[in-house]
Image 1 (spheres, rainbow, N blue to C red):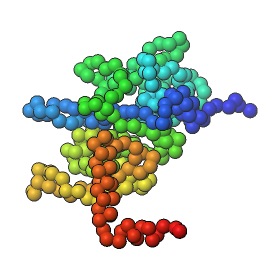
Image 2: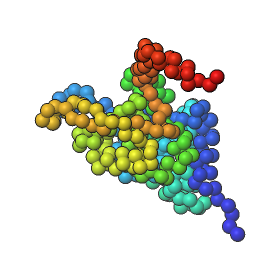
Image 3: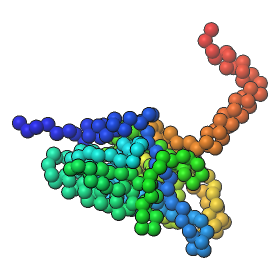
Image 4: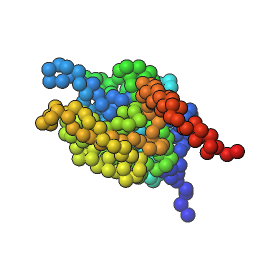
Length: 289
């Protein structure tokens, strides 16, 4: 009888527990999804972040998300065996040396993008997290904890992504759109499906459409209605687009201004209800004696 080997789920849980994060969430800067770039005439605009370079490297994306979850302080590094990383990311599940080669190729890809740095640590490699913007020129940027200030906006990803199996249930389009939706930091938002809007996220129209359909089918995304937005490329300068909300466990990101707006709207609704004749009496009548 062969010796027991940790499963993918056990390997992931080991990594998540060692992080000791409060609230079982981890931050990612919005610049991972959408970067600030210069437009054709030097004006500031948005363009694709490093996520766009991982759409054809699903195992590298999974490794990176695990590194983001695990590394919390100090040099923001983590040292583990290749076999553990391979099982956790679903790259290689057996306990032999082939895992080292398979995982090394993924680390190399992430290092070339400026998202991690590798250092020798005894017989193992220490993986050090670099800032989510990736390469700036030819160099990566040292990681610091995000502050949430203007220009340093971040969103949180719950450990439920792994614990509820979404890392296996979702394909790359679904994962990419899920991350983009969380980075919106609003209760209700739009997701651009035109070519220009999708490219600003580093995605194709096809990827955005597939991702939305995937999230809708899993009921992680809910269609809430339509909104009229400016689009100067249309004949009338406006177009109607679908609006969405994220469902649990991913509906955890609201900006401070969005939280204040929702609180003001609730207060206004409560005050309006008090002005309706009989509303208060009706509520009291419905209460148990």
